Image (cartoon, rainbow, N blue to C red; front, side):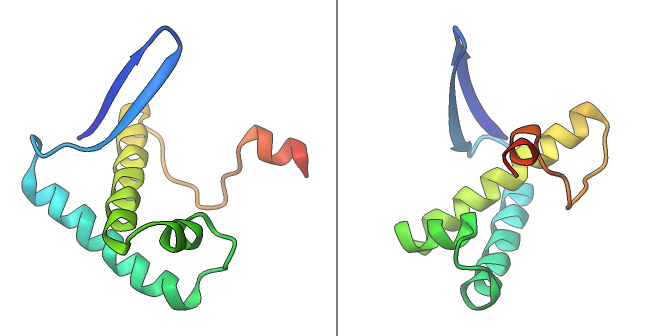
Length: 96
């Protein structure tokens, strides 16, 4: 579902395409919308999502979150791994 055009080491990641499964896309959007409703009141102000909501329209933030979730799901399925919510990247742990 997420579109990607990459060449020569330069990545161009696009949004969710409308060519895929419309029901799956609808579920991703509804899930993202529910997370944004919760994040507006309860999330930390310095979180990625709260910063995005303040910079962009709420619907744009919803699609961006759905796209991020789709990329995470795609990566988990292709690598046959499980999701760990406490996962930190090597660069994050190196800076702390």
